[in-house]
Image (tube, rainbow, N blue to C red; front, side, top):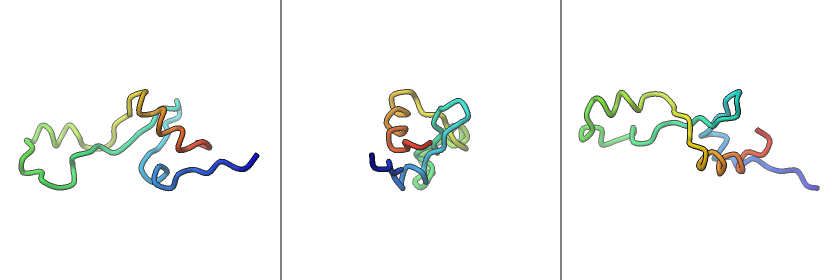
Length: 65
């Protein structure tokens, strides 16, 4: 069997937690922030854990963890 390669874009954008969940940066924080209120900006600070349906897709991009 050939080796499974990790997708380069996925390894730059996602991290796996110790329990196997997938962490990702929050969308909507790059530009046009004047139209968002402060609560939206504060709540999207840092990273979030992806839901199971999205995490299943991301894990297929990173077969080696």
